[in-house]
Length: 356
Image (cartoon, rainbow, N blue to C red; front, side, top):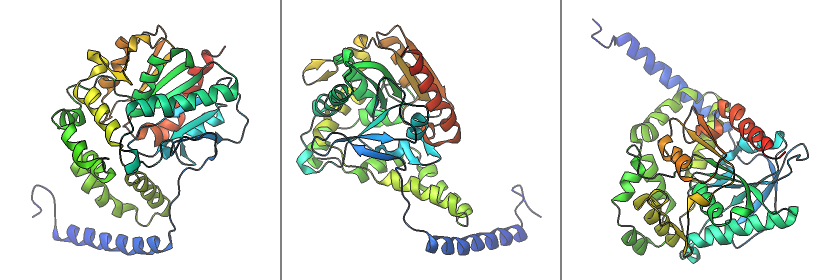
């Protein structure tokens, strides 16, 4: 008799034996493995302001794009997610198509950075990188690609300095922070941000990671590690898993004042939609974002739901607005096999049509 789940003593014994063999093989694989690495593409530092460094990435071919592309990543994770490994690299895909790619590395804030504000990140650091590229290339403007929180920064900068941005690309960027399916926003709306920052100063990376993991507690804290047993004897798959884990937990602390401003203005008060967003005392109006926009979002994104990104369509002032709805999640949009084919090609073709 097997019962409704069709479980027998023989099948349980067989599964236990297979589990033990996988663990044994995995121990041998782990002993042979060295540290995993990421950031596969050659790069060079082009400018620096404190801990913040824009890097220029070098591919196997000389860039053919007339206008350089500056990638602005989020503060909460390291930007090498877009250049994770040779077969999972948005950067490599763009370089292969002739784009001239730069990425801002925000560094690791420490206690001396507690009082950095949104104005510092958007006007001083992002703006400084843009001005450096404009001067270095002898151009009035650059292409800007903002990712997640970096997309919010890029929208703010483009609204304040529209003449310095030729084309704007936003990827998994929240615009409407109060969509019903935004669980992260629902949490933050109930938080006393002032008490939080006044108590902690900078926001610890481990605390931020814990919050993200608890958005999908079973899948992210249990299921993926149970599934790890199935790949312990596959060196390549195990390297991919460990590389992703290393990226997830290699997170910088958050500068306290910038965290306070961002969460208050956007997560709690939804100022892109309701109005009143400010950077350094200057009001940000998305209606002033009149350059061409390519808005890319992920259909299964649990951090930035599609409707949170789609809101840009009705708020931006541009008459040249394009959307790409990607079948994947918040991370899959950079590292999945489908992403390697679709995303860099879409970006390249979209830019090429606007550079003629």
